[in-house]
Length: 97
Image (cartoon, rainbow, N blue to C red; front, side, top):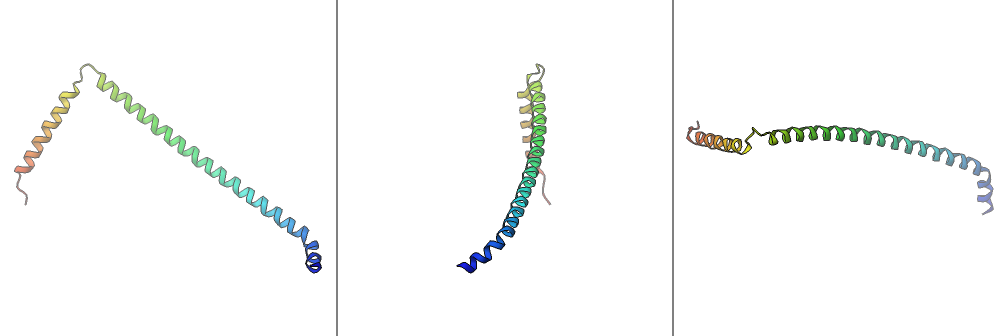
């Protein structure tokens, strides 16, 4: 026991220095990781904000189209359905090679 204690007393300052250096390096690495994560989060938030603005603009355009008095959406939907029926009939009649 005294041999171990005699060995530990002179090594204690060196072990403390190694511990302090290790703790500081871990702290710096953690700070860099947090900074990188914050930058990535800020970049994603900016992308999401841009996408939200784009979608809001599209909704405004659609609202203008639908609320426009001269726009008959039901007629246009039916015209698209009729056109699809015609296209389906033409495909059935066309012989495949």
